[in-house]
Length: 114
Length: 276
Image 1 (tube, each protein chain N blue to C red):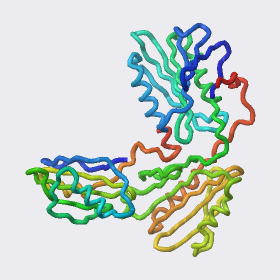
Image 2: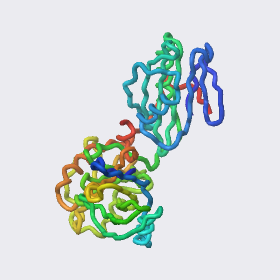
Image 3: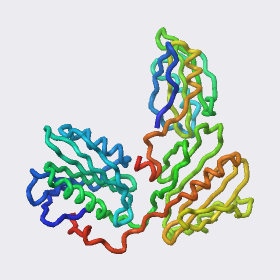
Image 4: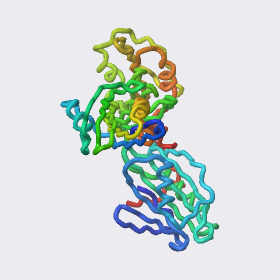
């Protein structure tokens, strides 16, 4: 399973981390910790919902001197961090189109023969 | 556990067995790995095998043939013609899908006159491969809802539509469960305490499976269906905010195939001496 995003808009670069289990306890603290990883200086954070309804914490801030957008999107019991640099308004619009992609995950007999 | 064709010799290394024809390894061989994990689909296994054999250049592959082993396990075979150092060669793969792993029977033949013998041996060994897993919790076959994605949770599959969670619908498919462990009535009874509607929904199985039904209307409409044959129950459930997906669910129900039964008798062609 992985995070699926539309192609990045011109001038935007996405970096997508692997999905991790989201704990039932202290979920908010977990999400905030993820958003702040790797020397990210968080300036503002909002709770958003993707276009098809997935909950997402979006944070604006900096990594070094680079204005950076981060989103932590939750798909049921897992979540993943997406980082964007470049045109952050365009990046946010693309980020809100995020979906889970379960391609390659075997869950049924019919998939064995594909 | 695979058979050993008459006249062939076996060589065991760790968990791997190599069967060598009477004429010797220069003619080719058949390799057997009894349990390879994790479980993968047929295409991924084929790709992996071809990637490992760098000397083999594919000329023509397939088609896949779906099989059911003598034990009732799902399996597939494929034959691939190619070249090794400019000389015709053939690879034949047999795959037996187990619950969380697969068995691999891989034939490698270097003489055109032996191609048919090797590929038919791989097919026969695949059909006769035994794992003694018996009647157990296992996946059953159904037509997946088109365009939906599946999340695996242990033996369960959770199917959800492209616009989930805005489109609040999910089809949950449990594994087939042995009837001697839990009956369809007992499975339904687990949910019956919250039932608010009589079980009157019409269902149709394309494979003559009888159905037990439960409907619960709350925040979501829940439809629990448990089909059964003489060995297994086949439970699945739709949770949805509207009736929009009822037809999709009914199609899924109708397509459920019973777990393949083991063969009553093993054909003499498959009755090789077993290799353990």
